[in-house]
Length: 102
Image (cartoon, rainbow, N blue to C red; front, side, top):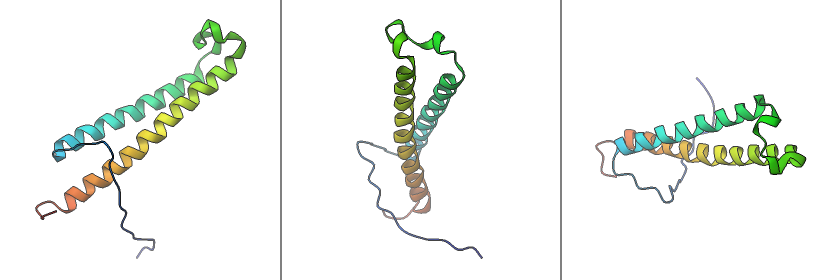
């Protein structure tokens, strides 16, 4: 027998309209693709030669440019992952309450 904390969470999916579970699954796939894109971008920044990716106007501030870009990608990743997690919870809720009046 395992131990842990069981709780109910109130989650509000702001500015998202989902008509059925198929639409929800498509939205989940889109968010998963966005997460994969963020990971690819981070790997690109980690493995690239800075001279190959820094625009000319940032030559003197190459570290700042890379930090800004990575911060942008990480922010996008965190926001997208948070939404994706909530969408998974919503899908679980729909599957558990399928056929019930909710």
